[in-house]
Length: 213
Image 1 (cartoon, rainbow, N blue to C red):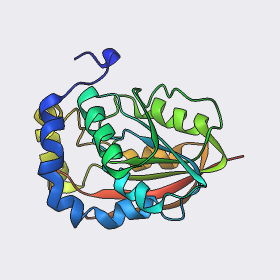
Image 2: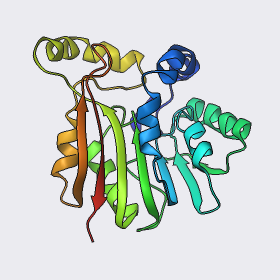
Image 3: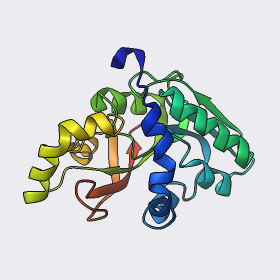
């Protein structure tokens, strides 16, 4: 489907949760927990997918935290809505892409991206939107897979065209952390590169940026 109309991947959406069930319970759990540590204020989940972050939001939900999310794929979004209902989680979930967020300037205290920037067509535009909707001093927290080095990078480049087609638009060769660190709207709080996962989905970067005043 044309990106201007929004992504639509019914098969990928159907298999995503079952395919990653074991990985979610083991490998990804501490990193998703990192994203919700000391969560406060108004929070936006960019690219909610099937709602993988929702159980973590539910676990830290208090009266002082308001949750919002976007997900442009209707099949993913439907599953995310069902997951939120199952958890009893109050979350404002909208159909939108990260390059054009349907929120006013300075709306959020925290923006979270978890394994989503690999699928966003224009990551620079999306990061600009993150900066726009964050309040000064607000945090952008992320956990993303990026291009590897050496022979693993060559394997990723070889697999990239097919992978993008079968994996919901996922790009294997992005240097996402470099884009984040170079953006002048933010100060880097921390960025860690981890040799996590297996080729072609490795390594990962995890960290926090703070919007400049």
